[in-house]
Amino acid sequence: MTSAEMRRAAEVLRSGGLVAFPTETVYGLGADASNSEAAARIFEVKNRPFFDPLIVHVGSLSHALNFAEFNETALQLARQFWPGPLTLVLPKKSGLADLVTSGLPTVGLRVPAHPAALDLLETSGLAVAAPSANPFGFLSPTTAEHVRTFLGNRVDMILDGGECSTGVESTILDVTGSVPVLLRPGGLALEAVRSFIGDVRSALMPQDRPSAPGQLDSHYAPRTPLEILSFDRIAADPRLSSAALLLARDPARALAAHAVEVLSPDGSLRRAAQNLFAAMHRLDQSGARIILAEPVREEGLGLAIMDRLRKASRRRAV
Ligand code: TXA
Ligand code: MG
Image (tube, rainbow, N blue to C red; front, top):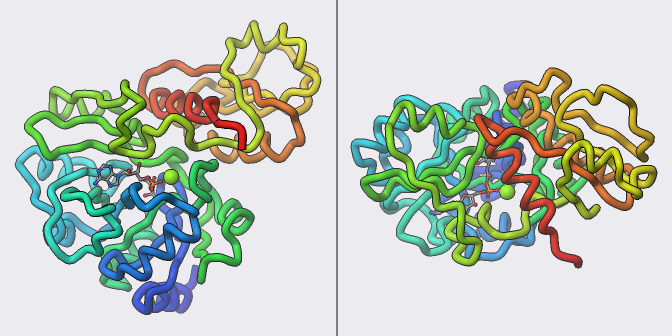
């Protein structure tokens, strides 16, 4: 990406346009967070319901302090984990379009750990509202090609920064109270947060009160139906020959399936997270009737992977 491209992208944002840009987690669909018309275009292009607030990206903690009230816990978390795959939900100050936060008194903020994203934030001087750059409810994009394929002509510019290194969205923590509450597991392992800050509660259980749409029942879904099954049940499944398989690691034997993706040959969960969405995109396009996915260990990034797989499996018929 050239510096001329970067200056043009910053100019597009400043004039109210939409720029898709890489972050370490997934590609974001960015707009000036102080501009309600620009923010409205994000919802329109993604076909996203207005009650679903956007994450605001800033270049530094000092810039973030303009937009939200940070308590001591929030400051410690930001100093420790920013730039990085952690979104902090905090009491909102002024300066952001109401639409960005869906009228909530809180805002989700993060400093992304990707050189192109940081360059864009610095060059534009803006706070940038950016959800993942995919149609609402569909698989998140981890390459510029995913964005081109599914949103292509609906965005003003796409910055290509290659493949995202983390591969799953940021971990979201509500830090408005005394104990942080996990709203969405993501690219920062919960164990890392807990060992740094101590107690963290989880709000992931009840599916009926979505305070983050990551919590909506069906999300992150391929168009092909997806079922989670153990490896042994996959191997014995009568639909095997017409199924696409999403395997956690290299199987000891070949299976005669329609298509196969291995998330992590050596079983590393970090690698599995990085490959997750790209593998699901490929399986979705393989023409298989069903995707059979093997579960991963629910530790480290495995928590985010299983969260995305479960949501993909709950896809409603459309
Ligand atoms: O890694 C990421 O977080 C990516 C990249 C682009 O930064 N972005 C992302 O955005 O995943 P999106 O829109 O797909 O998910 C944003 C999540 C939503 O589930 C939203 O509800 C939650 O953040 N969120 C944003 N503001 C919130 C708030 N004030 N209270 C509760 N949840 C909030
Ligand atoms: Mg999303």
